Image 1 (cartoon, rainbow, N blue to C red):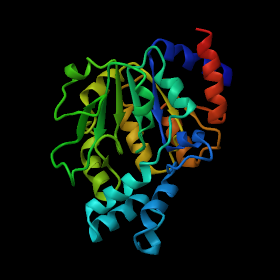
Image 2 (image 1 turned 135 degrees about the horizontal axis):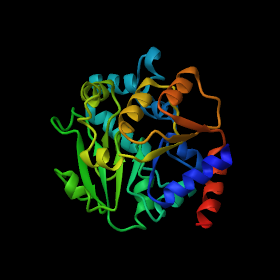
Image 3 (image 1 turned 90 degrees about the vertical axis):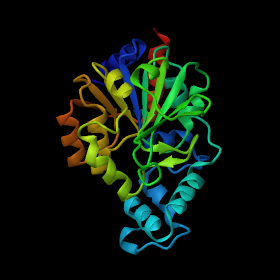
Length: 282
């Protein structure tokens, strides 16, 4: 089963038919020297390290961020997020492998670090679409940036099509503009519109048609993670994969089954090594 899935994934990547969907768990490949938080628990620990937060929400990322925003200021949340993700970390072996694929129309990166941007600098003709907070940019769901970090206030699907690769970061990113969706209110605003796809860029909706998604470093035990994944892969193909070595929770198993996501039960580092070998054969 694993060999068959790996062969299919490699072939679809070779033809540009597979879309990588990266989660925080990808940072586990960075090794012991990694300074970036690679999980919700690690991130909320950073946010609450310097700010007193009620005990009952100290391990709840969105609630803790909302408390800090309410009682300290939104800027305090943004500064804490930037401090958490500004460490000098380099792209992992997975980032390097994926960003050097010959055909890479879209990458979804559902975390706040900038390692995909760093890895993409070896390519030409790419740009970014990043989710932004209504608290800071009311009336805007997404900001667009060229590869050099220069912002374009608005981009149509046609304009984005000039980019050979689009990096979509629905939660925002530390680079280039320190925009983050992280508090309860940030997500409440998105939830009111995401079912009708308003916050999702038109170019993302266009590229995903008929393509398959490969989830890497993602868990689906949190309702918000399932919600974003569900809406981002909507109207794509019926074939997807998730590299998930751990046994899925009941909610995760139900989510995988509902959306035709095949679980590939192997460690992420082994998958990277096997995919690298498979790609060398094509």
